[in-house]
Image (cartoon, rainbow, N blue to C red; front, side, top):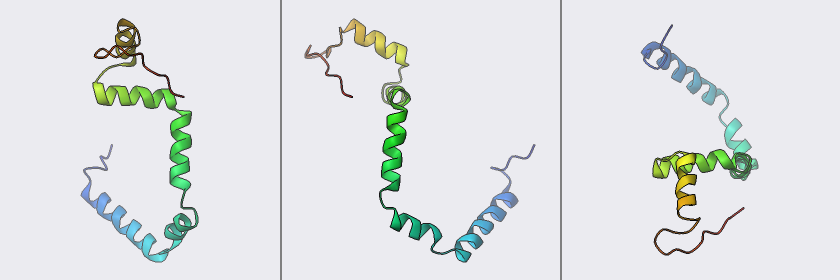
Length: 93
């Protein structure tokens, strides 16, 4: 099996092929994004909303290095309140 990441010839050929394509089609993507300026923002919003639970799990793991089960156990232990000020957390939808 070829490791394309380490194959310098393959990487060089791929970069050259992409460069030729961009030279042959200089305004294809540029014009599309100019004509659809909010596409990326709207797509990102829809994607995050459709995967809200996964996004939350990812953020908890990334920010606190906790699994969702560990996070929920901590919330239950704190009775869904801040550990410092003891105010209840507000749920957001």
